[in-house]
Image (cartoon, rainbow, N blue to C red; front, side, top):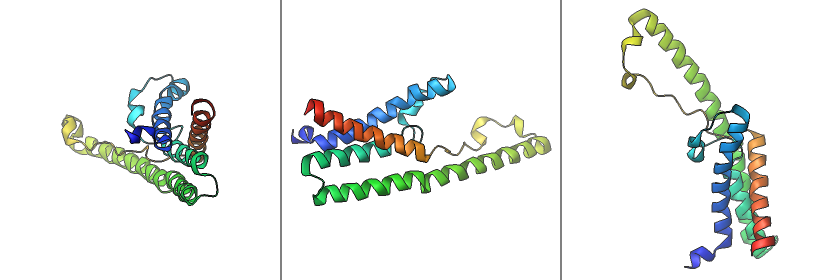
Amino acid sequence: MALLQNTPLLAALFGIIFAQFVKIPIHFFISGKLDWRLMTSTGGMPSSHSAAVTSLTTAIAYETGLDSPLFAVSAIFAVIVMFDATGIRYQAGQQALIINQMRLDFQTFVQEAKGWQHKDGSQKIQELKTLLGHKPSEVFAGAVTGILISVILYTFII
């Protein structure tokens, strides 16, 4: 079971799981609502993408050093993932918000014009997913989470 001895892989997986789990109490603290669906959702605070790639990169730094080609590949991979999380995916989420509002406006028009309210739920359009990407603060929090996971792992456990 060499796979279970791959500390960078385990650190990255733990980064994902920890970041996804901690979204639940953070959301509860902010909104007062307990939402277990956040465990498997995209977006939110902290970014599990950032936690995973920074935990992986930090673990690789511990294993191979900052001057290794593997660390360089992992660091560039982390930058690309975090850029994507704050850029493209965040903008897609913002567009989904606007599309959802347009859909609601259209539904209101149809209800008033043709009795839309009498149709059942399966006939209505499902909400577009608006929580796709991350705000820069969420990516930063995920990055710090991932780095801390590997630092703690290598300092106190390994």
